[in-house]
Image (tube, rainbow, N blue to C red):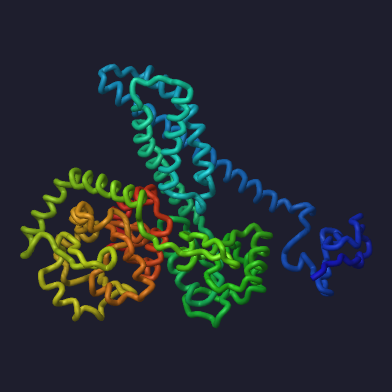
Length: 531
């Protein structure tokens, strides 16, 4: 296809600009209007809401740009100030604790020493955080795993710097002590910041208005997941554009892709989400161009195949480059790191929670007949069955009564859930609400039958209803908690839950495990989606 600029008629009384004519691919500019002749057909660039980038912007556009710049500046400055204070508090806490233990705490001396370390530590941390996107806009900021990774690297860089410069320390406590308290101070500070700003934005009615594009089934699934998410960016799907026959999903049908520029302006859309694994390539290029011209972000909801291709290995020596999809198993160093993490965390929790475990056992024994523990036979790694331990929350005849309750099932797919299950005891309802019935599985972790984080083990009844593609989740040890528990729990469809398992398997790191464990506590306290 060739593009040729053609001379257009200039309306009377207007002055034509001195743009060179006849340059291939270059439009003739006339009073902010441009015309191209593409394959013999004239194309008016202003028709579609686009304008010459050299034309003067109207004052309202300038105001919006300035407002966004101010918002961006306020966000970066506030986050930098938050991190500065948190790091200073962490260093001061570490030094103060050491001084108190030695019996020589003097506030002014500890504060002076903390300030000496602060400048270098904050500079390194801020640079690492910026590289990880932790000062990006709210919907693009990574979570706790990036914070933990950044702080570990900052401590490592500070240690190497000290050693290279020959600095002498009576001990290296300042590095691991400062890191420990930095993990607490920075994580808690960031968590409070996210919650406070989320509440403020919600009070102001701030939501990301989005249009979903794709085929009916995928649009429905993505819209449901966006609306079910109460912890991240608040989305408001204004409607959909479907490439297939119109689905009945409760959303507004906005028409065709040709109307997208008009719809973006009419509904003040900030994002267009492609929810179709088979979206036509040519249509995708056009869609992205139209959105980016108007400052609208384009995002793609990943499919199962997209998630799987994260872990791949190039097979050389072929005329066509081929990528082998590696099985998502933990082996070698990864296995050692994950198993060490499991043993340390499970042992620590068993010691700290021992009074709680004892109190729960006594309460179960005094309020209902039957054993304190319930042994649920479930498939583990490689689908090998094991006894998954739980505090008993139901009456002893619960399994015999399940068949008669099947028609009351409120979950989708292979899961079986009833909000008002008549088989649950009074104490059991409280335990389930806050997931306390799962605590005995710490013993399963110590035995090597489970991991702290991983895909949840399903009862045999649910396992027997799985489709073949679901069973990939059994290539690793099942977990006490996982992305299910911190991403909506029982409110998500089963296929969405399985995709979360795949995402975890393909993107695993020890920082991700730590992030999920820490996020589990607030998720449990909210008891959102638990029944």
